Length: 303
Length: 237
Image (cartoon, rainbow over all chains, first blue to last red; front, top):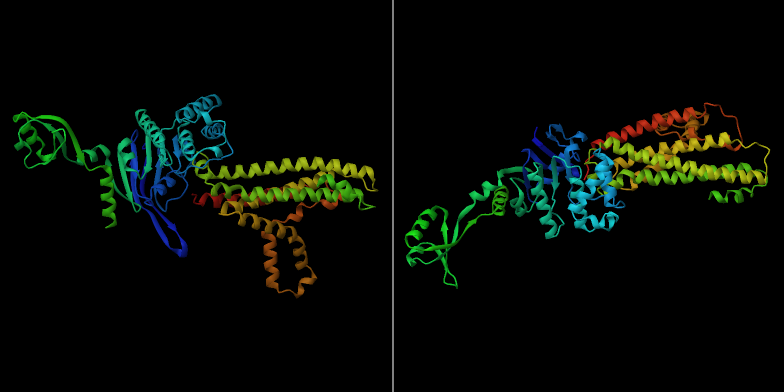
């Protein structure tokens, strides 16, 4: 059974004066066991609507969605889910330990296990120093980390994270990325929404791009990065001047030559360097990054 | 306020005990009304407004159990408050009755019945408040709608009797029908009023509590059922 299975999901909101807004348009998406899928889209593209439908906060107008085979309207389907809402808000008169006790009890965790796991996740998210303070005294980043802690508490099989890096400082972002990668190594499934392409590039196996409520693309991140290679920047020492003829070249201050070689010319260039007794000191791919891919899709949809 | 009951009761030279009971029951009723209005009307709406529902209702908790648990917590609080206030009232009534003994006996059973029925009334009102809180997006609707239901439900029996009597012959029959319809729709809080029995030690049948109890269970059940139905269909932020 798929961790997440969405079929032809549509959602229409009624706004003022009987107007309707189509927030999701026939979305079909599957998330496989053990993968990290980044759900990428600009603001207002339908990411949060999709996630809120998955966790039962709103009802789809059409279509269906299930988690591990159970329809999302059934609250029991969330037994195997750890969910981090966007900009989470918790009962702020509780301490983090008390809040985790509340969360753990809804998952039926026994008291001893709950205590051990609470300590573990609070340590992991670097919140142990503040675990006796009421949540109202926490900074935004600490609340975000507590949100992740409560999602990790019962060691679920599926994580649904809505903008998990939001409000975090660079250290927090790095920590969260590391946690997501660790979850992948443990065979867990992660579905997270973001509008930051670098986050997807850093941790995701696949990326799904949604714009104006429509799913535009679902691709393997590795494939996109590989396809996106336009050419190579090569630092060269030795060899004749003739070697770089026809290529874009910079002469550096240390008299090294930096040549940009198109992907299709690479083999020929490498052969020429070898014959001409040149020495390659550094070779780096120059590629269209995920952001470029994302921007192309958004631009195409707008046109 | 309960502590002032013996002093205020002494203003009545002849009916100190009776006044002490009246004031105690009225004070308890007023305190419970304020509690019900504040707790009931801020219960679910506040969780939605502060987005606590986004973290709580995304756990494996159904909306039905969340709403019923909210009601139950308010109900427990009201019952406990009723018990504490009843204990304090018992002390004050005893004090007033000892100072100026009355010809009438102190009917403790009736006083307990009156307070118990009052608690039931506010449990029913809190179900109404939870219903309005489940459909609302602000504090005002649940608070004022519950207050209006309370006022109308407290007066509906007298209005019904008025329009059912000979005085109503001059009123348009359509208006009478509307008034009677509203009477049956609104909770009838006069069914919970045993103050006179408590004050004047009137005889009450052993089953007197049964009707208000059944009424509160049935009416409250319907209101909570409607609240669950509406809340299950509500879209949350």
